[in-house]
Image (cartoon, rainbow, N blue to C red; front, side, top):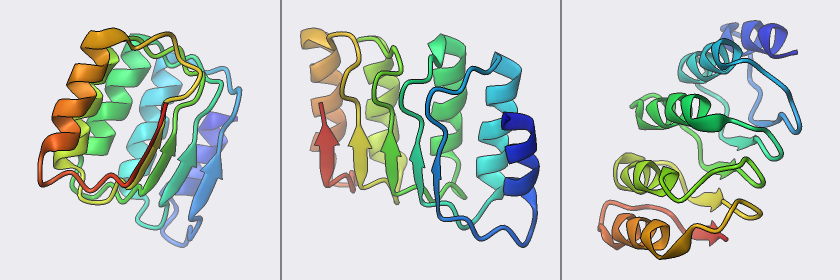
Length: 136
């Protein structure tokens, strides 16, 4: 499913604004292609990736995409994506550099614990952080 979706997202006439890819089993390479397509697409502002097992490699690829200056995502749901406490450091960095991200859902992930929450709070404390809604 993801390879076909990537081609659609890369098409210059694609005006899709909201995308849900829930419970999609994909390889790391398919995630890499998908996240690259997000960098190309200039209309997508909302993505729901709930119930996907991104694992560390997929999560790192996502974070790289979110840091890209052409990434226009405003809403991102990573509910039940098996994110761990360590992922919060990367997410905190996203909160500082993303000029668009306003809603982030991290519900139903393993406990983020004190360390994960400290990282997120650090990201939220920066004046550059535009996030308005954080769902835990």
